Length: 443
Image (cartoon, rainbow, N blue to C red; front, side, top):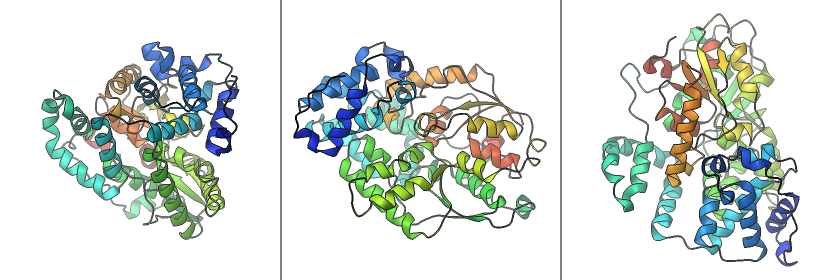
């Protein structure tokens, strides 16, 4: 695509990178077939090609964003399915992120939108604040049915609706504590790994980190965390908050650099993992942190990547668990953002589970970080479409690799929704996942 950016604009590295991405686009339209919002609306400006036109015009001419332009860019999920499809290797990811920063700096949103975004930024990236908000939300959850009918309070209703329902009787809500039997076949110490804690996973699904620790320890790895670690920065990044993003990334780079030697930094939330692997790009112009950021990014691995690298014991799994019918939902941040596609399915099958993929597995479920809060109608439509495909396989359990996807789907799913590592931990000597104990799956 031809561009005519002013020379002085291209002196900014981020603008120059955006211009380079735009120039690679040949307007073929392949991306539209894999864009969830285009598939729903059939609206050109709600697909990647149409958004690139809008971003080009806005950035090239330094225009103040209009409400219409902002609406179409806001509707982008950043699922990155277009990047997987694109034959011209357009870096849409960095283009849309730069455009969101530009919008944040040059567009004044209505008061209600500004307030809601500030609340999200003040609560979600902070583990303790989020845990407290979750506890209060559980108490206030019944009010959502009333608040959703009041336009000014609809965002509050949406947040309350997103609070997971209380666990069913028979589940304590606390992760299963390790027992000696779980480590009877533990391997000798092979190294040390850092476990990325994230912002919300510890409160929404603490059993995922518990399962990860048990499985890695049985494989011979010491698992540590850094208490200085904070939010990965993805939430602020996707809201266009450049300064807050950079501060979050620098904090984690410093924290993990000081944590000592570790063979890998393990992410169990693929949305965080995709962000962490981009740290080198995000701090490329920071002379004090660029080298460390690049080194940190190179050590990040999704838990499935690391388990495959470490090698799961071949004989321990298949006879240890019932042959559940599992349907796997590939998170966009894993299959498109990190290019990890077949691996989780292979690990689950090797562990003895019958695993299927749903139709249109490449399409987003609608969670997309805070997207399900900011664009609830589209998010709900995508969830309905995704659950229809998942339920169509008649599964005993839905499995995914991202806490956001799991929480979003579980709110309406007819069967339990688990993380991949929960089933793998069970197959290789760990306890039965709590979601199966309380969720009533056949097992």
